[in-house]
Length: 434
Length: 87
Image (cartoon, rainbow over all chains, first blue to last red; front, side, top):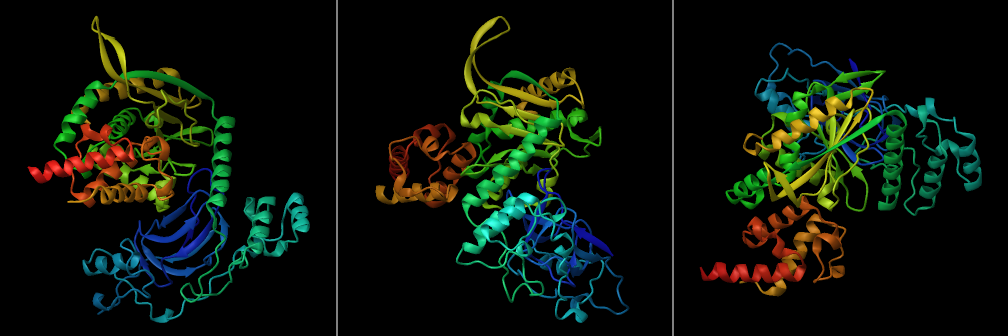
């Protein structure tokens, strides 16, 4: 038995709202299966499970907002086959999302049929899911004085407010949200009803109901994280103008051979060059935690993606140093589309080991980045421009791009930072190797 | 053969697929699309792909600058289509 916890989907997340369960008690799950949809203040994120097993009990109802680290479900270990058990009899308990291709329900029987997964237990004893616990009772009740005053002014019952502060404490913003919700014509108690099975009564979740709400929450989250970065991280900044002509010539020639869907963008080369440089300089790749640098095991580039209407999200492009340019391009396109559609996955939100921002696409010459804590470095690229460029005693016109590095001085010095930028430069001179 | 009116609808459809918040009526047909709609290179590539999906017109990379505005894009596609049909 183990607890499946509300994950931290980025350093700026304190709590999340469980919007939807994709599994029911009795469902067999494999590591990496998507089991729930959670709303952070920035986006709706699909949550993956980290172990194989069987969902024993769902502890948090849909619609509930709970702090990071709260137990969401109990998962028991996969059970050994009973003698004579026939995998063909194994079936998913309820088809909550038959059309969802990544659903555990689709994946589990396939795995069992292939003999890859331990045999699953048919959920005979679980015809009806047990009522989930209400776990927030413990956290209820403590509200800041400001929140209490706001509640009294706005006529809001504090008992009905979901707290988003530390340990579920009610903050002024929560009271204001509750006041807005109670005025809305579709108002439902923000607190989810405790014992309703998912499919019989859709729960009114306290999700960001309008673009304006989402926008305000996102600004709050970005503000909090960036303030923390500027407060805690002693940034140093470096920049290097790189001759990008060779890369671009190679790219244009290569794109002639490609169909429209398979064409590469310059940003794919930039990301690949960064990933390869990062793999050679592990001191840029990881986290500053508890007063020490912890190198990361993989190169997961956080790709900064601006959202239409404002806001920013930087999900991970996993193992970018081992991906081909085609894979990087496909991966980034997929991330951009899912980021904008609000369908990112939990591992993409929590995994980035270094961030890359490509603001040049919007026309600026260079960007001095703000590091995403607890990462220790951020690489920025400006616009690709034609410039007069002196090389080998000759003056010529070249396409160049300014690469910048913002790095954490606690984890290293400018000497390492300059090596890192020159490594990126070197990789961009060998595009055929990217 | 697709009329210019239909090609306009194709381009607008491709744009609003990538940028659903855009009001088609508010697009200035002679203003730069990327600037007025805040479209980046990834969005633009996706628009080119969407146009290709709908019209089977293959737009080479070197012609991207010829699709700067809505009107430019429509006349480019109309020409490309005529040439494709004549070939």
